[in-house]
Image (cartoon, rainbow over all chains, first blue to last red; front, side, top):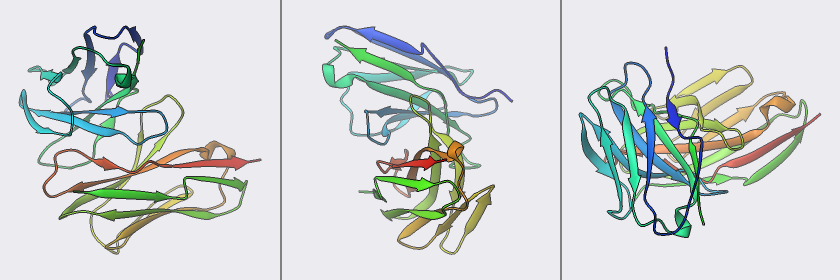
Length: 113
Length: 110
């Protein structure tokens, strides 16, 4: 069984740029959720994708967007980067309709200068 | 709005000294309460899911319990390798994502 993987591991961008983060869900899982974790804080829910559509969103602006592909992998896109976007971005996968338990990947550390 | 408060924020124990971490929550229609362990710079590692008051789950030195307002993570005879941040999260009936607390940073000294 393959766990959740994310790429890249680390990323440095400058303010105003755009970034794309990638996630491969755990084998057999059909739902992907994205979270932002600032230093010293718990993860905050950004959005969730199921059957290639966004079906839930937290309190994040529209410049945070995503995609889910037929193989259940996913992308998180952030436009017009701000300094406060510096954080660990976590992807989690789950099997909707069977369990609410989410399994997390190792994360992507984004630094915005 | 779902809310999770964890206490204490940090806890330092001697090896073998048992203790409990607290997670207080308010949620509309609990669909699950989750405990995760997180090492520095890594993603959260799943520990337990609890669904209803009175439920208990155990794994090695850890035991999680649930009431209608809070959950406890009991650590029995901890070892230095148990040092980590322990996160509690809930999923409410009206939510699609998990709501996390800030975590308890646990340090076990040899």
